[in-house]
Each structure stands twice: as C-alpha cells, then as structure tokens.
Image (cartoon, rainbow over the protein chains, first blue to last red):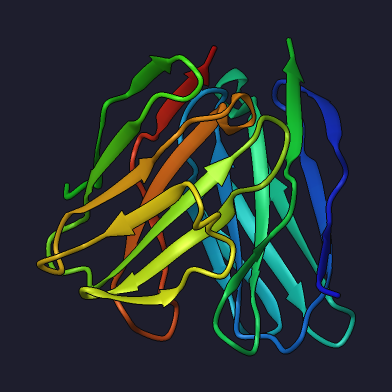
Length: 109
Length: 114
C-alpha cells in the first residue's frame, strides 16, 4: 500500500528553528508537496520538490531525497502565526496526490 | 490574486436531509478536485474532474454522493441523504495542468450533520 508518515505533533519556541520530517512509500514518485493548514481553514501551498536537494523560500525550506523516500520542511525564525498543521503529499505514478495526516506544530512564546 | 470560491462556508443539517456544496475554481484551471477532510487527518479525494469529465471518483460513496461540472467551470457536490458520519470539512481545489500541477484550495465548507 501507499503510505506517508509524519509526526503527529511537535512543539517549538518562538524565534527558534524546527524541522518537520516526512517519509513516504508510494507506487512511483512525481513530486512532493508541503502545505500549511491553520485550524478550521483550507490548506495553502508552501513548496514543491521533484529533484533531490534543498529548495529555499524565505523562512521556509524543503528538502528531498528520493532514494531515501524522505523529505523535511525547515521553518526558521519561528513566529506565533506559524502554529498550524503541515501536510506532506506525494504525487504517485498515476499523478494522484497521496496525503499524510499532517503534523500539528505548536509554537510557544 | 485569483482564488477558489466555495459556498456555503458552514452548513448544519439533520440526518436524512439533502445538502449541496458549490465550488468555482480559479479561472482557467481545467482540473477540479473535491476532498473530504476529517479533523486530524489529511484530505481524502472524493472526485476529480478534467474539464467536465470525471477522471477519478473511486472513493466517492456513489449511493449518496454525486458531483457534476456540467460546463467544465464551476461544480456542485451533493449528499442525499446525509448521515452523521458525513460531518467533515469539504474542500474544493483546482489546478492548471503542468509539471507541478499544484492544487490551490478554496476556504472549504464545514458540514455538521445532527
């Protein structure tokens, strides 16, 4: 079967750095997405990785290793507004998105 | 900035009643998706349209759910009759076919079935 694993919950301090990991086992790979979802709201697109390596976008960076079936989202200079769930999703060989359950990130002052 | 529109934002209904949700994708986005999301879980794809055609409805409970996109633009998702287990967030997303095919979501409809 197809599977996306993320930690259920993480806690970090305002101003610090946090890394949210995602491992996947899918039938084929055609890209990996990270979305942010605030409570009660819809997911918003953060990043897309299809090649190995690090993609940086402001305070957020996303890394991919296709050989290891692994990605992480790195959030720097954490702000209270970063408290949200972070969803990892992989596009499989049929170009269907397989979603993880999300990681709830709690930021403490 | 173009956005996906959905209505209503909230819906409370009693079980056995019919409910309908509407979605207007970003202009020019040929692909439209309906998802259901239960609290604490990732979105679950219900149906995917390419223009007016259904591409994937394998997870749509067809005994009670129906979806249409008659003119290949806006779309309606219907549940009849609603059951208690249908309480969830219903999300609509759209994408422009391409390498990334990034999906952009509307604000969602929070359904509560009593």
